[in-house]
Amino acid sequence: MQTKIRLSDCLWVRSPNSEQPLFHPITRALRQKNCRTFSLQLKTDPESLSELKRLVWKTDDHVILHGLFPSELRKIYPVFKDRKNFSVLLVDWWTSPYWFTKNAEYLIFNIYSGIALRQHPGNFCADDWQPPLLSKPERWIRFHIMGALLRPAALVARPFLDFRDQHRRAADVIRPDRMIYFPIPISAEDLPWVDEKPVYDFCNMGDAFGFWLMRDPYAPAKYNFASLYTDRRQLVNLIVRFENQPYRFFERTRLPERLSWERYCQIARQSRLAVCSGGMHQASVPKYLEFACLGTPMIGSVLPYEHPWLDQCLFPINALGSTPDKLKVKLDEALEAQPVLRQNCLQMRDTLLRLYDPVRVFEMAQDQIDGKPIPPGYLRDTRIISQAPLTG
Image (cartoon, rainbow, N blue to C red):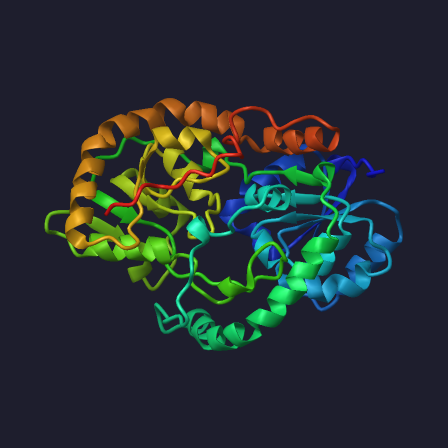
């Protein structure tokens, strides 16, 4: 029998990563619900781990591990190895160490694919994408270089990892009541609406290179250290071919520094269309919601499980295998459709801010724990996996 928990009565153990703007709305929800939180400061506070151990072992309170990196989870494993009595709120669920997902009371997912792929056979990546044998660094920085260097080792290890994961999946007992959907919330104060004059035709505000180590048995090992943003990179590369001939284009990855949140929002509002893709792994990245609420329609990929409203705010396109000439036709079509898509975004802003309000999302997760279904507005029909039409 699954132990019912009250999220507001749990101790929330969070990574310093949760201090970035992305997680500000959920921080507000935790405060409004008077939740106790503990920030795990392993790098800056040597006593943080000992303090956590003292804190969790002196009570029987349930613990929510929120957004912890795999390295942080490994560090706290000795604390929970015998105690257990925890749940995990997973951001990039495919990176999570198996012991924690196996032993958690509840698996709480920001991205619905983690639930869908456990309940229904399907592809982790769109059309069961086959990644290239080798990855080339996009920029000569440590993150990109390490991904490229580790790709050959990942290919050698793949057969052994596939064998291991097959046995883990076979032994897994799928219990829908154990899996909770908790989408990343948004707040109006973080996404102010200002009627800006268009400066750019297109903008790319996200990374175009990203790799991970697939620790979850439902994420195939063949994607270890392959760039899962290949679709986004290809679309950006093709748009760049037409930069100033005739399109005005803002490309964030050209900047050596991070944009402030205020500048990020401003550039998005000043763009007619924003490149937006969940990557080949079809993740519901927060940018879909951010752009829609900023009144900026998107060009990129639809999602198979989430955001049924997205069809009204996004021009679907898949640049993989396309050519510049064929893509140019699609870009012109997207700009022609932009006024209607923009109006749809503006009309939907209040609805999205209500659906993804941090307190509402928190209470929706609690309702699922209490046995209630996910309300309408969040999910597509999960029996249908839709893909963006090819440009060519």
